[in-house]
Length: 403
Image (tube, rainbow, N blue to C red; front, side, top):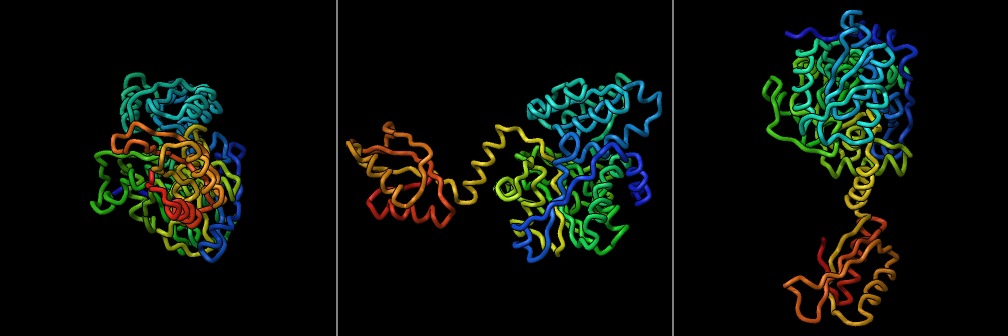
């Protein structure tokens, strides 16, 4: 049996973190409130120091090391947020940090981690592979391994998020958060359930990287054969022993969301909330928008991080627009003659849609002589408007297919 972290542990962690982390704001969300039929709030850990909640657990863990342990330095493995949290905490506590990151880790996260003074080693394709390398480094050098989630001090540190939520919205009934290895949801459940047992704590995983559902069915941590998601911050192949025990005992439900759900949530947070959030930080909102959870208001969704690569943000915005029916990609087959393109674009303009780009394709062997395919990207006002545009083109005799 694994001993669970208690409320006293979380409160002690909060004392350690006084003056170190900021009490992040709780912002109301009108779109979520309308969706849920009651008050909904966003806990903005994307505005935390180093851009995520991770500094809470990392600082508590490193602060409790002995002087001799700190003298040997610390080592961690992370796709980015835990890396930055460890690097910042190590800098504040006067110890050296080495961080192993996957080869494909977002460049802004790598640069930020270096900026806090950590030495970076890019190893492996996933966080799991980086974890193996970090543990080998710890054994070889004597550096103390700072686990990203599977340690009582880390769980206690992350649980301080719940203490703030319960103070900011004492009447909260549902807390929803993203889940990777389970450190944050474990800490939230420990504190929230101890203060108010009626609060529901719901964890959300990306469907393409969801290790907890099969683990809970099996009754033990179970490793995924493969996983891939835009939510790199929660792309973890296997729960920890300690976090699994907490989730199994305290967390009410684990649900999953699709990549399209995540994209829509990021777009909503940008457009309506004016908040920059990384994919892993938006999965709680994605679950609420997609209706995959029954959340009793008042509800709080934790935005766990905001460290997103601008290039990924551009792709996610485009994907989110497409998922919301506001970015239409079609291929139109028509005659290859003067004035044909102008007529085609005029038909789209008549529907008050905006053409983003146009590509002529004449090399398709399925085309007849004198025909051309025109690939179009079109901005629309939503799914209904997209249907109107396609319907108008087909009514004018154009052959339209979706790219």
